Image (cartoon, rainbow, N blue to C red; front, side, top):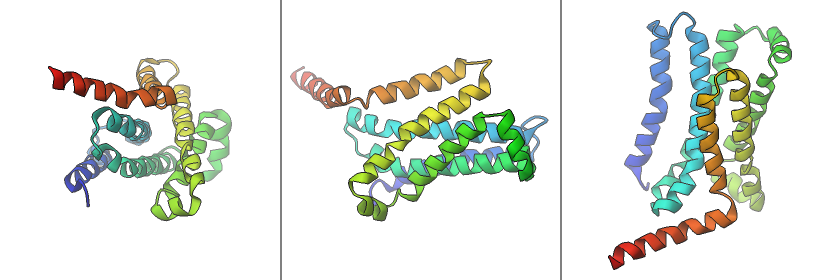
Length: 206
């Protein structure tokens, strides 16, 4: 397996945070409402992992190191794992596993619908992330996995609807997401390798 230690490092880093948060909740280190804090942290962790996953291709183009793309699928699956934990924590700590309350919550808090749409889109990407699905779907696989851009928009909208009063942190994630989207616009994406080549030539000449 290529880049084994790099893959293990990514796995360790991604798995460490939920374990740390669960330990903090157990140790009463998350304040008076640890369940709500867990829900929020897992949701934010999902968004951050989504942004990190989307940054792998631009980083590979900017640096020329293929190791970034090697862990892209793993990061995407971790993103799905985080959103599953986020949803599970919401059902347990906010709803108390009382699914009859879900309809009330949906009417009072429409951002839950946005989050649910993002979850189902991530579910489709996770289920089809394997090589069998890639071969089976062919060209349609790439089209399907462009849903990741829709998921990013839904995730940012979900967070915006929740924070509303304090937009500073949200603006940072939105700006990072905007830059990552700009780097995928074909004319800009085509220029990235040229910039690397020009820089390499200038260093060689110097």
